[in-house]
Amino acid sequence: MLPRILASRLQRALARSPVVALVGPRQVGKTTLALAHAEAQGGKPSLYLDLELDSDLGKLRDAEDYLGRRAGSLTILDEVQRRPELFPLLRSLVDRRLRAGERGAQFLVLGSASRDLLRQSSESLAGRIEYLELAPLSLVEVASSGTREDMERLWLRGGFPPSFLASDEEASFTWRGQFLATYLERDIPQLGPRIPAEQMRRLLSMLALSQGETLNASKLAASIGLSGQTVRRYLDLLVDLYLLRELVPWAGNSRKRLVRAPKIYLRDSGLVHRLAGIADLEGLLGHPLCGHSWEGFAIEQLLVHLPEPWSASFYRTSAGAEIDLVLEGPSSRIVAIEIKRSLSPTPRKGFAFGCEDIGATERYVVMPEGEEHSLGSGTRAIPLPELVQRLVGDAAPPR
Image 1: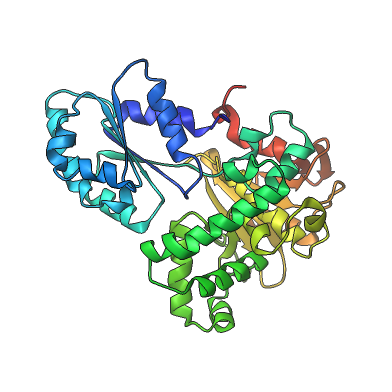
Image 2 (image 1 turned 180 degrees about the vertical axis):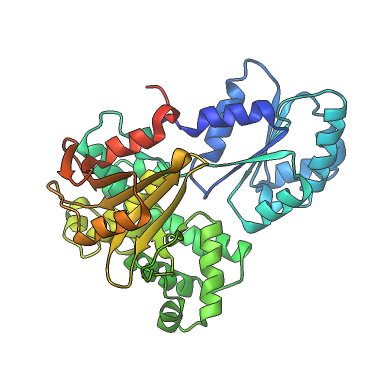
């Protein structure tokens, strides 16, 4: 089992909150992480129920009686979005146990990040629940040797464990195709407005080929024969499923005319490549999508473990000045990042203008590998793995 950075955060959350929700896309490792935590509790009783299994659902015909008998144990409810009516019951059970003096986690709920899960749990368990998102594998979690091969494998295959750990590129490519088919044919229709699978596949393919571009919902809608409002709903659903990231434009004070539309990225680079028909590294490096794919991959790696107080955006003016990623954190830190595939990167002229406008306190140009060095004017070139480690800090798991 690969170490997950979230494991220590999950342990702390379960020690202080009566209910913890572990959310993220399917096949990302939520169940594996939850069961590993339960096994490491030194004999503390636990119960695991998969709400997609009829046998486990049958145990909850009288859920109040069944779950009410589990005082003192941790109950793990997997795919809980299938039974949103359980949340009011969980609230009652939690309050009853709190009055009896029971502390620590009582329920660990796992869900595939649907809006129903978030809405139902937040309404019924306000003040009693803590949310954690488990993302696909990251550089910090897989790059044990720190080699370029580790990073390129993760970039090509993406971070879903079955894809990253597949025996070869063909097996990884095939798995990602099956994963997309499952989402298109089953999960998305269950969780949102119904749309023909082929139409949603076309939308996803267009999003893959538009990686890193500013959102133009009308253009997307016209290309697949839908209304702009409908496309907007589908994009919101993909965001809720943690498949799509919308990077918002920088919203600080500026006298310059700024682009106001968000930039869109499919969050997993392996899915981008599957949708674009890119099966191996050679095909990726020669594909017109290569630079945009690398940008999206780098941004996701930099953001996936970013601590809560930080916010992320991008900066672009109508005149062309641009910063790929702006990170704003505690102590008035403003980190400006430009992303390059080159091993000898030089920042664009507009990068310096943008840094002055936003008041950047740190300036970086990210490259795939090499040694960190100065580029002048307060800007430093830095390898992606090194900057990721710097941002993650002590959150990295021990090896």
